[in-house]
Image (cartoon, rainbow, N blue to C red):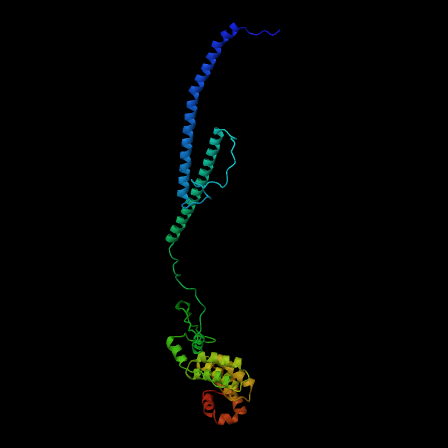
Amino acid sequence: MIAYPTKTQVLRRLPRTSALAALAVALVASVSPVSVAAQDSTDARLRKVEKEVSALQRKVFPGGSGTFFEPQITAPAAGSPAPQTATSTPVSDLLNRMEAVESQMARLTSQVEQNSNRLALLEEKVAASASVPAAPAPQSAPQAEPVSASQNNLSAMSGGVIKTPPAAAAKPAPAQPAPAQPAPATSARAQGVQAIVKPQTADAGEDEYTYGFRLWDAGYFPEARQQLKIYLEKYPNHRMASYGRNLLGRAWLDDKNPSEAAKWFLQNYQADKQGARAADSLLYLGIAMKQLKDTKRACIALAEFSETYASEAAGRLGSLYSTTRNGLDCN
């Protein structure tokens, strides 16, 4: 059988139960205000931090958009929101919000550091570019190859630019020039060469020869030689070729270089013995040998001249032939 407590036993237990209940109510009353006050203080601090982060976002990103931070006031969502069910405790909500704030702070700090580094680099570049002095002009230009006077003057004749060789590049004239180098070009010489006009006719070959003759006649022997070489290279079979080779030898001889002159006189004579100036070249070959003090070859050239071109020796070239024979012992 089950034994039920008696009424007396129940009455004895009531004071103890009431005391326990009163103690529990007192504990709840004493603890709850403290917990609620602590939670309210934490919420207030958290809202303050969130406002400071939003203010920092606006300062770093003026005119910011939703890409960087959410607006404080948003339009209500369309439609009635579904009832939310509490799935987390207040403590977990606080932790989540703190984590979100920390992540935003980390992103902002990283972006500020990047911007600061970029500004520092830009300032360094600007300071470096401002402090670098302008490149100094070269002290001395590289020495160019010596330009002959004939090249300068011929360039001036054709409308080109006259190149003046630097004074440092000038070389002393050798004791025995072979062949003789053209005299250095000067402004006066260049102007003199420019004053000589190159003819322009239907016969381009004769124009080249005539221009060389005019240079030789004016005493510009280096320019005349170069012009005559151009003429002979372009028109080797021209009707004035014998004149050109003979005049080229004359340009060397008149420039006090009988050795080079003798080569052109002999070449002209051997190239065409019936040429218009073959007799002249043979006679001037004897003159060049006489200047070189080669009496034997001078006498051979004069003897062949008098035999091959007897009419010329007695006529047009008679005076020059007689003058050349004077002082030679041709037995």
